[in-house]
Image (cartoon, rainbow, N blue to C red):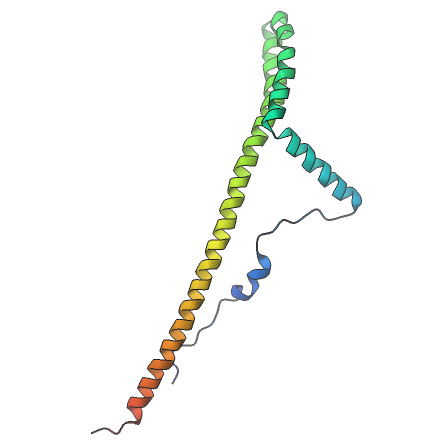
Length: 146
């Protein structure tokens, strides 16, 4: 007489092939080249060194903006400095946040995998206990009653 039958979740068999991984660009040579070039430019512009270079370029035009008046100075701040310099700084921040999110996602996946492993170990342990208890029950059922 079996008292419990384990029915594993369907996700258990499918979990290994769906581990987090990077998927590259699909398509022909042009798509791969565009992805490569876009990646290189993004990595180059998204550095603090690029932000420093953009700030230097922006500050070269600052004296002319100051001499041209308030309107030109406001225009320089909005169109030159903010767009040019902060673009790189924002990209650096996004890269840092993205790396942290990737680390958290990877850790979460590994934690979930470890928890699943522990749950499977518990299931095996319970199966052994069930077999022992079933043996004890059968032993008492076979013994004659006084």
